[in-house]
Image (cartoon, rainbow, N blue to C red; front, side, top):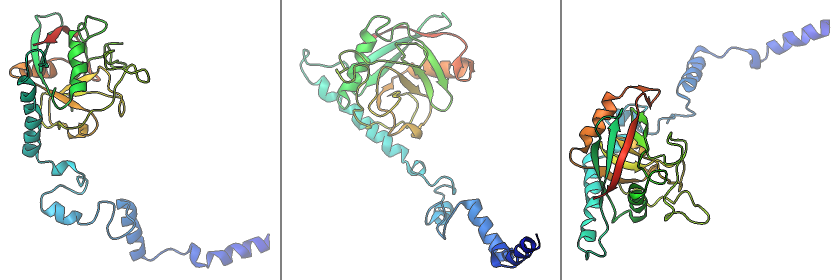
Length: 266
């Protein structure tokens, strides 16, 4: 017992059990606070200059605050402008570039939303959407519901399987023997820079099915993740915003039925 006490006292006198100086304590505390391992820190080199130049605070050093909205909108317009190449073809070779959805809230008179498709730049993605708009209920979008309203994104709909967002399947014309219910990402050419962008809601990479969303705000978190392929035209955004702002939700789920009563190609 005496030997044990003597050993403990001797160990306490070593530098392993001594308290660090106050300056060392402050340095350690700062490193823990900012989770850094050196002079650069976890925020990256030059964060203070970016902060002073108005490029974002220390927690906004990602790519979003570098987005030039005007430039991205111009690129979006160029992508949709490629549809003129399709319209210049003969009538037998023309591909429709506009579809419509008739949305009814709580059994009221349906209102139409017209969507312009980027058919020239994204032929397979727009073909899937166009064919689902032309199909009968159970197979296509007719009689499906808006199953969720995300306040930071927009309206979510298009589940032709369970009608609650838990499943979806692409049109049989787009399926393959190895992937009969989904198809691959075609390209992230259109940015989610404004309300009215129509984008696929894929559960993973190269797993596009029937589910899609309509944005009601700038949504940079969707760029590079979901394939945007269309945009709402004319007065259709009035319908979208009336649903977005006027329908009460519970944890994102609408408390009234918002149904696609009709859809098709224009």
